[in-house]
Image 1 (cartoon, rainbow, N blue to C red):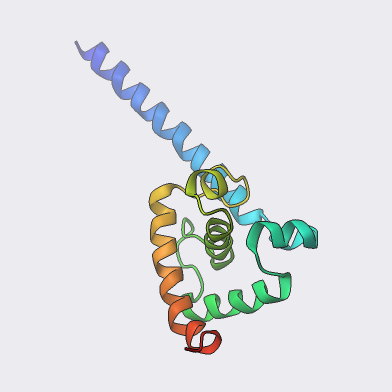
Image 2 (image 1 turned 60 degrees about the vertical axis):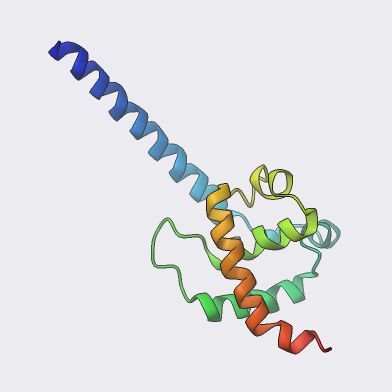
Length: 131
């Protein structure tokens, strides 16, 4: 009986180690992605903003969010890329979930979307929307 328990424990430890490596690889891929390396036409198609406007909004996001403190936290540029990609596509699964440069889990994206929308509503809407 002890051998069965130790075999199950060994499999669980191996599975946890593999998942940890996969998560690290995904985070490194996401953090190393540079949206500014895209040509202008593809950039506007993906994010519906030109690079200058994106940088302006990113500056506001960085002011509001501050620097990332956890190694696993999503950087402000990744947050903005994911949210703008979502707005451009209108669908989570295709535009954000399967995108190699903005890959976020659905639960992470949901939290990111909420925080980003609050920042945009507080900082950009009063400046750009006049009723």
